[in-house]
Image (cartoon, rainbow, N blue to C red; front, side):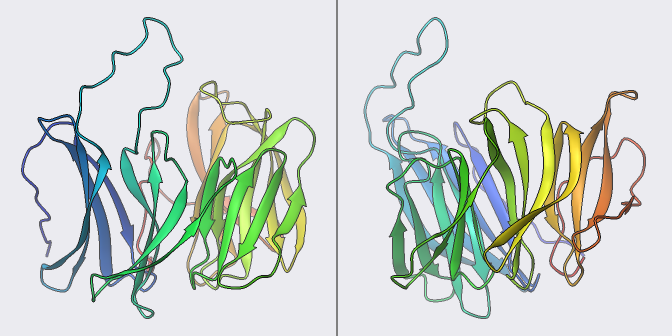
Length: 276
């Protein structure tokens, strides 16, 4: 069986999707441009037999003329944001967490909504430069990649952030929490900041209880897709320089042992639900 989630055709559409932690509901955001130059984002939840709940519709960019892009990059970020990226969906707790992506408001806050009440439930403001973020499944810890470090912020308390200093001239990418929220996996990539030219990954690391350790040396372009629920394994995609294609593997984050992911050759991983 399948369920269709359809939207009218509109200019500049973009989407973001995230399964709830139990795999029984799907949160979505869809963004589009209006003729007056404004941009809007709808946030909602789909559960059961096409039971759709629209949580909120936000103005991502105010109305007005679109700026003319410069003849040569880089272009300055546009005002507002482009899409709401869903960073958490705890169905048991009933909260969806989102952050703005794209534009001048990128990663400026985490907004919380009630998934069933469709009510705004609070926010965490982000007043520092970050490259990406990952929210723990119980939404009590927020991990962020910052220049030269990874920080883990306790939410809802006055506790200071826990800090992991990175090797010189590197940055962290692919931050993802284990399904029990006890461990944070991430890649350490070459270069002080993310760039358009994807630098090679130096290593796969794991953080737990305030301590970080390197599990593997990679030395290839890599992508970390997430944890396999209920296991110690993560899904890692690594460039095979000989075959010039990406290969998928499962890495045990306790032992560092690899095994094939068991997908057909040339397949690309899109994602999985929590009951994978």
